[in-house]
Length: 201
Image (cartoon, rainbow, N blue to C red; front, side):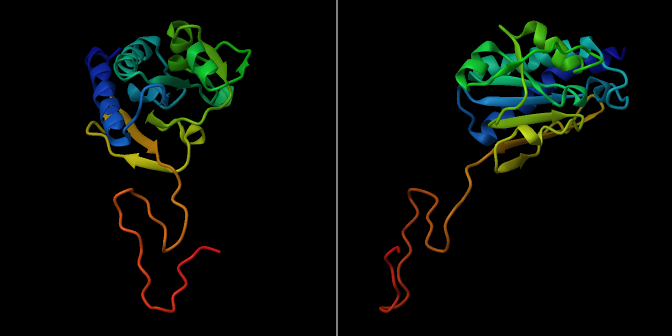
């Protein structure tokens, strides 16, 4: 075990998550999906060298920030559980998420999800969510659980251990054409000629 890596990953994930909260203007009660390969954190290939010790450090870092901002974390399982997610009972109830019957284990679900299942309050597993933001540590492919439209955020700490970090938050879709206004202080478009039709049909 690389003790120097384990000793820094908790602080690193806290810093990156706080940057994500700021960039996405996240609010209390919103969902944040956490994808993590503890193998990749230690420099091994995803799914080959998972460890609960790394998962513990990362969980504590995530938990600290989520409690600070009132966010609801969702820990993504590995592909063997179809990238299902571990959430708290509160999150499942708030968002009407239907639990499924499975217990994540390090070899079937991943060390991160297995640890989260045993430490989130009233933890359950659900098949899918529509998260407001997410952090992906080690290319675990969290995009299937993010709301559209995903906006990438470049973290100040691009690697946690040896695992590359990707972050994103969602923004509502922009709809409309040339007349559309997207901010409340933006002036309304004016007709360019007396013959221009300005009413909506």
